[in-house]
Image (tube, rainbow, N blue to C red; front, side, top):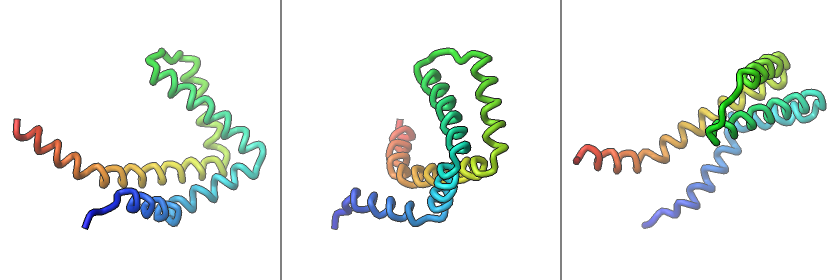
Length: 119
């Protein structure tokens, strides 16, 4: 019997939504968004982060000033308890998604890994 990968993917989506990692992330995200100053601070942090990522992806050089600005922004947001909790929850969720990705990609890694070994 063939497995429908999309059905399995929707099951994984549901499991993610029911996971402790996601529930924590959503709770802290809602908490930050309920506090206008925290929300604005977090949005500014995200803007700086996205700007640096875009520059990096486009091969543009990131200035020392931009690096220092980003470091100051990280230090600032980490001092805000709600944002710090949100960032921890994001990291936890990211690690879980990374582990899921490793599991999902394992058959392809085994397939292509064995092809490399046959050369």
